[in-house]
Image 1 (tube, helix red, strand yellow):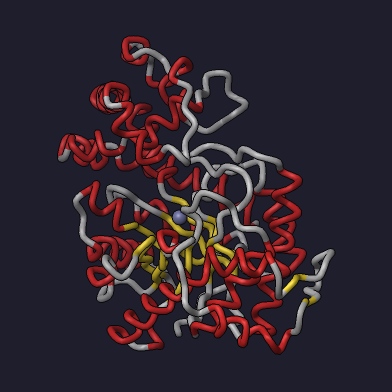
Image 2 (tube, protein in one colour):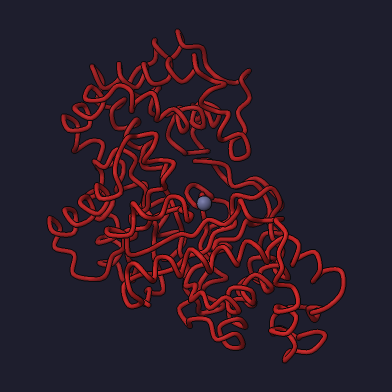
Length: 413
Ligand SMILES: [Zn+2]
């Protein structure tokens, strides 16, 4: 097992042009005394849309590390992979996010084995930090077995497959169940971690689906006090699982769709300090949005491209938003017309897109549509990536500022 550091930030970079700008945010954080380590993440789904290869992300990460003289550990995350997709990532990734959401709710034959595994803890267990004991029998356990036993067996199968290809010292294992319909309660997280321990999966990060909506690129939507209570309990459950189940002591929560959740960052920050525990936060699309902001601000052809991206995304609304229906909330009535956007100045465009809720021009509906519109930019090919090169400085400054000031400092600082 490759042991992961306490604080890590996942950074997705759809078009592979911002590796240096992203790493700059991390190095500046370190200079401020925030001991954070970078993880570059890209899912198989994203590679497919952009037509990139897993090795491209490794090359980007290595190049950025070389260019900035980064001397500490860093990781390349095969994000949201399964048995069918993992092989292409085995050689170049050293962090694997085993996505077993598709196996949630599938029948399992492991129930008796799991009950035997839990037997040493008796009928109920008191987890320090939780108000009530957790029942290890009865309806709650049955439900959790129905939902998660098969999925965690799948995590075991994927883990062992990677292990057989790579060897044990060379990678970090994350297990994700965030792309499911229902959030997992702290009680369910407890049983999920027990199942992973039974399967012998040395998970170091676990990505549950938290309560509330984690929409792409916009703020948290939900009951903030409920989130606080459950996040606090999740951290208590993780600490218990490390002690009692023998999971790695580096095990920590991973927050997916973690960018731009500004209203819960103070809570997350407070709770990880309270528990003295680690945290992984994944971001991806927020960097792509900063690229569009940087291009728009550059005016001329950059602003033209930004307008074309919106026009393309607007025309293909159903196609682009469909796959993301559970993680976006766009009110079409609140989208600006294409002709309005064509008439915007560089500043008006940037203000509508930039995630600054205090700015009257900010439009979260516009922002979410651009978020899923990266396919339009991908189809522009060199026209888009040449513009990123031509305006590298303006774009990179936005990328660095966004990661450092809006994300790393409020969460880990
Ligand atoms: Zn995820």
